[in-house]
Image (cartoon, rainbow, N blue to C red; front, side):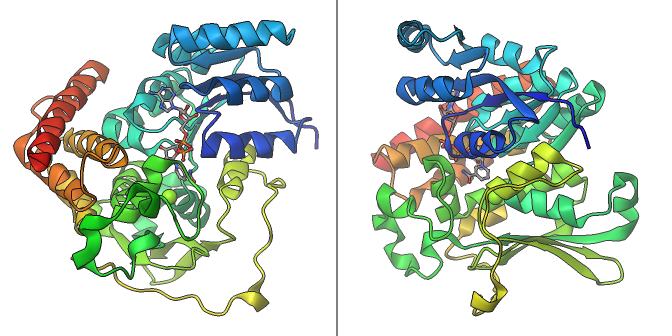
Length: 395
Ligand code: NAD
Ligand code: MG
């Protein structure tokens, strides 16, 4: 079968998802061309990526970083146009030459370019869960209006998507429950009374996945799973009570769908993000991802357990936020971003991340959360409250 070459923009190309995406793309030069790469500040990694992948554009977060990159790009004799800032991110996402956008920036900073891609009707490969948690129904509306396709890259949501029937209009009458699996992170068995002394190094040492620092901390608190519950609610249009979280330490079953007849369909594989990335890129076809095959003879056991509310109090916040007025999930996300950054900066104790999240949720009940401006204003307000809360925790 001859497949036309697709131009791809990768938002957050120097991160964990970004580099895995480039790895997959490089395996299929006849199918994909890198159109644009973007990163915050990593000039050296971006230069290396430009040398290998020869994009038309490279976008850095600030003019200073763009200038540094432009000098080095010129010295290497590369024909890459270097841009900077949020507007450039939106431009390389919505450019008429682009077929698909991998949204792999971390945090709410990824919202605007993701929405720009959605509005322009691109195939949107969404790793950046925070943008959906912030944008909620409004984000899904932008995708519907743009007429493009949203494909989940988060491994759990890719697993659910792969387990669901092809026609989304059949989901409401067929699906009873979505079962999201969670590894339980590095502290599944740690004594809860020692959580106050957790260091950033311990929190970032995930047993099964190598990921960016923010999502690693989220996995350690299980706020990652809380964000994923919210993500699933919007992606698949189910009610919050239809979503359940199951701890599965081996990370082999990536998630499951239970249907009304109580049949359960699951997606399995080795824990390698190149599988959901390849599926998103090739959907509805399949292509080589570079991942190893599961070796069933080497699997000793697949085990499942209920998450412990005492150890992981943050998980419940997903359902609480989904029960609040629209915009409440954006408040939760903003608080968590501020708290995690403070923890990584050694300004906040690990067990205080939850306190900041809960206090911010209780203090701020959104009244207006429609449209980009209102959402960004709410995000800013929640960040200010969460920062004040971090200061109180330290005092
Ligand atoms: P990462 O920290 O490794 O990479 C983040 C990328 O975004 C980098 O290229 C960085 O330069 C860029 N970036 C950061 N802040 C930016 C800003 N303000 N403006 C522009 N660019 C910015 O993160 P990651 O682990 O690759 O995760 C990326 C996203 O994918 C997150 O939303 C995460 O939750 C999600 N995700 C990651 C994994 C994983 O295995 N790493 C799995 C599922 C979902
Ligand atoms: Mg995930």
